[in-house]
Length: 293
Image 1 (tube, rainbow, N blue to C red):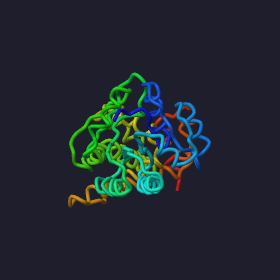
Image 2 (cartoon, rainbow, N blue to C red):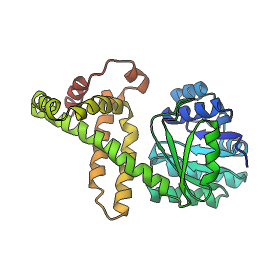
Image 3 (cartoon, rainbow, N blue to C red):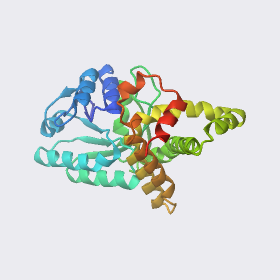
Image 4 (cartoon, one colour):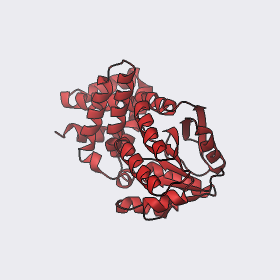
């Protein structure tokens, strides 16, 4: 079935960027903004996503629904959409694009499939996409994953990796364990060094022997701060993923605790818009974090 209308829930930082790409690619993009913040409403309008007002109207209008939320909300949204589908059955393709464990993805799939939807497990790797750029990949798996590849014709880079649900989420979990896990280690050791009073000495040694790592710290840590609250749940899902294959969850439970700490600080409570518009050198960020309880 040709895809003509895509629902995006919710049009936040990543979701509104995906919506904008699909809109620029010639598709109708819809959403439901009931109960959403003024900021999310602004982002949705910027992306050209139509607010249909409620879930029933959304599932009637959409060929595909992209779930793009913080991980902790993935299962609740699936249950919500399942209720709408039971009230107004449609042939919806439900795509979970959240940073969740394979086990969580399969649970989401079971909920929406029981309500009559077809399910695709997807994992997003890369920054919020932009029209005309292919810097963001959507890994997809599951029996209906090939259908999602139609969105390649409308601006997204969709990569189908197989018919087993959970595989796309597994790719996302292992990838984020490296990237966001490393950023957690960087942040924690820098804050520790600052509190121990040896920050300058450590920086000098890192400049001498780990110049590439210093450069990466200078980019990764400042970019993380306003997003730390979203990364807590992702680290918890990575911990769950690793525990599921017999590995310790403690490493990424610790990363979740680190991001929860950052999210609770004054820098972590700054909005992404205000953060991007300010001068944020790494040494000042670390000093501010180290000064927090």
